[in-house]
Amino acid sequence: MVDIRSLSRDALLGLFQEWNQPAYRADQVLHWLHERRAAGWEAMTNLPKTLRGQLQDHFALQPLELFRKQGSTDTTQKFLWRLADGAFVESVLIPANPALYGEASDRHTLCVSTQVGCAYGCKFCASGLDGWKRNLGIAEIVDQVHAVERWHMGETRNAERGTQGNGSAPRAPQPATRLINNLVIMGMGEPLANYDNLLAALRILNAPWGGSIGARKITVSTSGLAPQIMNLAEDPLQLRLAISLHGATDAVRERIMPVNRKYPLKELIAACEYYQKHKGRMITFEYILIEGVNGSLDQVAPLADLARRLHAKVNLIPYNQVEGLPWDRPEEARCEAFLEALERRGVTATLRREKGHDIDAACGQLRLKTEKEMAR
Ligand code: SAH
Ligand code: SF4
Image (cartoon, rainbow, N blue to C red; front, side, top):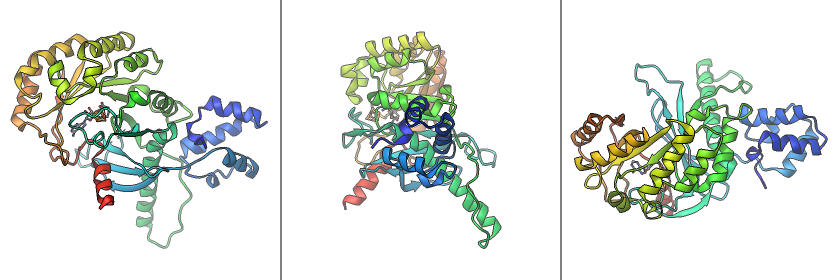
């Protein structure tokens, strides 16, 4: 059965017309789904019971199950979801300004997964270690945002109850406040290999009747699927694009990213230029620094050339160790030296400086750990 949250407003309006239901009923349903993030039909109290029954007969409404959570408020928090078929995916909630001045931040970015596993098998990545299992459906992508916000509403209610003492009556669900205002599609999987579901989900999360998240606040990260980058360039959604470059020459890139054999740098950069021409300056290069692979200073010149050509910003990310893989990050001073050398060549670049390998650890690791524990 199709999950109702994968429907666009137009599709629901069309259906309600067939069912001889007024249009405002469709908007009521959308309000429950996307504004209130209802996790079941029984919550939709202003709908006639017969309509609720009819919807229930036609559609699934199956929220993601929170299986495990790591991290604490005001730091990065990882959510491990169990899907209806038992598969696991992760989302990561990142406060924009992690209590920098002692105040809790109310702006949050969610890192969203698009596939169970990944077929692209980058040598450094936990998500691809066990291969690809399946694409996520539209609703499974949309519900990562809803489910985190549902969790947050629950936390807020618990905190309020705590201050009122245990004897107080539970309060009615409050009108939703948005927690998440930025999305990065950088979780498990290759987003552009699940192109249609991803774009449908992002249209819903972007729509005023849906998530109302601005397209410019949504960044899609790809390992470099050149044809799909060109499709994205022609799409009206003004998304931001991040390229997981990790190597500025074919020799380096090929060593760690098998996708480079299919789409070598020349093709990838041509697709990026096409994207940039259509969209303006919205490309970022992600460059994980891996000791002995891509962090030596001779890589700075080719990287700077590519970045200047595309007016791309470079995000340097010291590698997060993955259990069972042989890679490590260069020493801090070497990362700083790489950054300085890039900047001297006129490139806008940042270096991620958080301490601790597991705080900002890339997606895929909590799933891996959980699956290993369950196998034991
Ligand atoms: N498949 C897409 C999006 C998911 S990966 C892509 O490859 O772009 C999101 C980012 O995390 C990518 O830049 C990826 O290269 C990076 N990444 C993967 N494993 C990592 C690790 N162990 N340490 C740091 N970054 C990692
Ligand atoms: Fe897949 Fe991206 Fe990981 Fe490569 S880095 S294996 S494309 S998720």
